[in-house]
Image 1: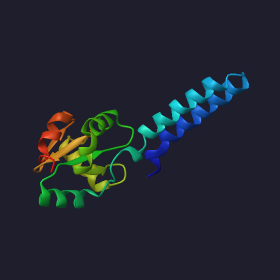
Image 2: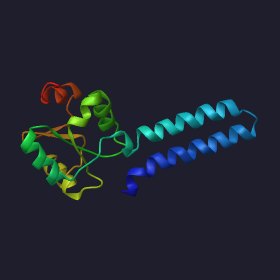
Image 3: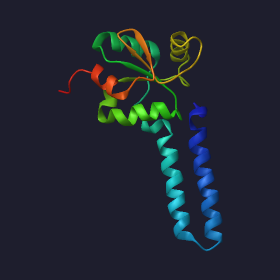
Image 4: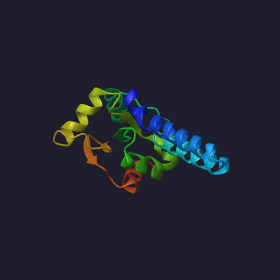
Length: 145
């Protein structure tokens, strides 16, 4: 769990240090802008941007019932972030599994990728797809109601 927050915490700490230095030099406006930028970067790379993760067995069970894809991801992965952002509101329709929180999810990803934890790995109808195009993933969802 803590591993997911390392990068966001470091970004906030670095932004605070840079901001403090700029304030001491008499430039509070630039300090505020840079601190805001670092906080936004921290938020984007935090687990808060992604829909709530569930365990791999539960995600696979739900996927078997409703046919929606399962996305295996990890915090601070830029490709996972790209998928999440490009999915927009429809991202909530997917089943998300954080492989850093769920050892069973990490095992599924390693099995699909020859021992590597390459994410995002999207499971559609039981078949893994590594770093698929977000448009393709959107097409795998049923049309919005």
